[in-house]
Length: 405
Picture 1: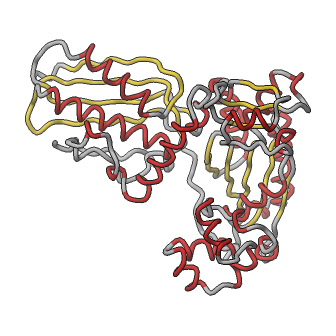
Picture 2 (picture 1 turned 60 degrees about the vertical axis):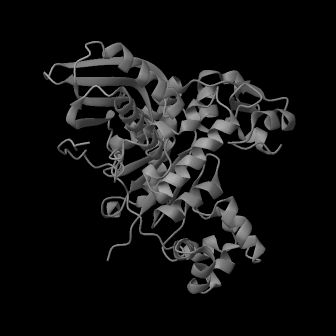
Picture 3 (picture 1 turned 90 degrees about the horizontal axis):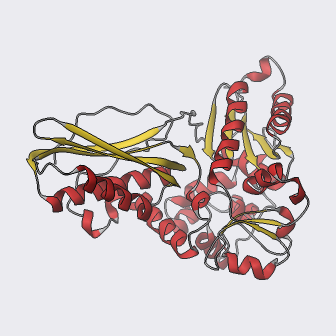
């Protein structure tokens, strides 16, 4: 069996690096990109600010206290998206199989390429090519799987390369703090520290049954990752440009309450799918089909977003403009297009820490218990809304007949 070779690529302090690319006077100076208000959030910070304790996701008011001398920038989602596309195209032209995990993070499967040239040499040249063509610093980690490669990248940052050869995984991971393992968040980290588990080496030596008893089903996955075991596949890059949801009613209707509930539920579902797939939309359209099969569509440009509180009011506004015939409605649909890769944080330059926390909490609940486990009260009647799979998993969209409601 051929051992895999998985390369992880991570653009260093991406938003800051883009700002420096376009404004060289920011080089070697502390820079923070994020919300400008006191309730804003740090979206990206330069390494010069980190010695003061500044971190991404931190409330801006705390960052200002820790590093008042930094240059503070609101950020420009459009420019960041353009630069992300540039790096994506460079990788696409060099690598046969890759995954775009977010606006600034990629995985590439280099398995078998050593039959033609050395994989380490290829990874080194790919990194150097990205730096030369994009003008952006990038760090990479190479190992036999995604988890170890990602950790290796994090350990070598900024602007460097790390190689963990086959058989060296446990040795590499052992001295690291346990929260370096992906999947160990703050709550699990605190729990493990309460048990006296601080280093990965301790996790490696613990019986897997003990971890399962403490952490449930996640305990087995964490134990495997601590031991350098990971079989998660590369999800092939599929540059999907739009995502939509339509509902054909069992009986044509003019029930405004029902129509509104369906519209909100569909938009809410699409927004969640965007966030789950690390996507942002720049265009929204609403479609109505009347009982006489006449179809009307209206669309609007919006700032890049994946937020319910922005998308739902816009969908409602378009619906009100469209629905002017007072004829029975057969179908209602919502479509989000102009999609780009990016976390919702890319759009938090005007939003608050409270709003970010709300969406993070909602999405954790939905990911764990199902998309319809928590919804707006107005959309509770639209019970058939929701998806069983991630539309951004790299697979072509599945075409299904409209479900009746």
